View 1: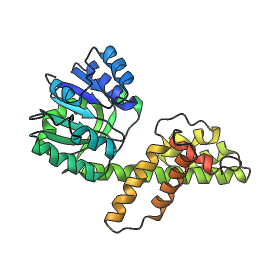
View 2: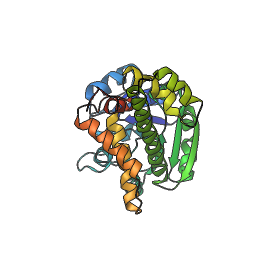
View 3: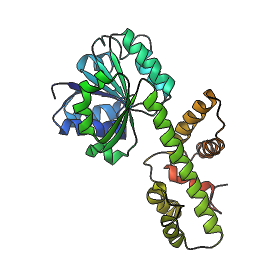
View 4: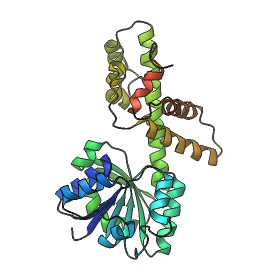
Length: 294
């Protein structure tokens, strides 16, 4: 626990990861976010700094976690001229947790080597509460000896974890996870929407689904919300569109046609265009139930 830790990107996931490590006895030295209010508020809570520059974040810590929104944000924090995380980064370890394209993870891995630093992927397949409780499921990739240097810290954050391989490999698997999850969510929304249109009791339909081949994890997590139109955001439709789009891009690169993923991506992109991107992914039911959004 002698390693000092910093975080870049302290939305709900990043902030709760920082709180967890603080609770476990690690020194959280700095937090940074484009939302300065979020960073300064969390810094006051944790008793750490909230530097305005990325270089100052790197200088403050041995291990820097990043949880950013997309490839462009990732490239910005690491590669923008004038101020970036690789300034003075020799010997530092960067653990990148957001769901991004495999290509950007490989790009940052190579840039880290040039800076004398190390880059690991720690892709998350869990919720906000899991981050706070140290119950994340993590998919890791990069150089395994570097992973071993931070394994104790990773174990405090996760209930389970898998080291998958070289740079980009964890991001590939995370893309597969979210692709299948989003397809399942879209399929459930269509099944429940059709059941509602036929006048069935949706509680009965969900119980039947749970006992048959229609069962799925998303039936448990999203089915009730779809029926009740309760779409408080745990994983947004906007993020679902991005993540399904990542899988779509990977499929194109290897010459595969994935029509179910293409249709799911289009549905989530439609939600964004309709101004529903801030809803939870369960909000895709708003597109399938009669009398809701067209």
